[in-house]
Image (tube, rainbow, N blue to C red):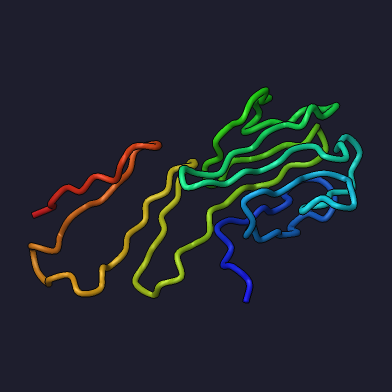
Length: 151
């Protein structure tokens, strides 16, 4: 049995546009090398161009001293950088991928996304009905989840 993907990468510019890669591992390599987790054959992409690292606090990208750089939403990165859903990852000038967190699988969950911000609306099994159940739980950055009653 394979682990469920927590995110996916989609090529939106470059070779193989619309190719999707489901991410299930904590360490993902991006590059031209035959051993790369996500292998991309394109001019300007280094053998081991960048790596994605996932831990409980999120998913991060690191450039691996590539010749043509790694860019997040148009900004060149020089250190480990946290990814947000819908971020655009450019490997050099010829390849752009979209990073997207996986959509919740439950039938009572809704994921709203706008400009890299995600809101997850989910019914909690066993929650009491009525006004007492109306609450908003949110998380800002790496901080702890916070709950506010909505009644």
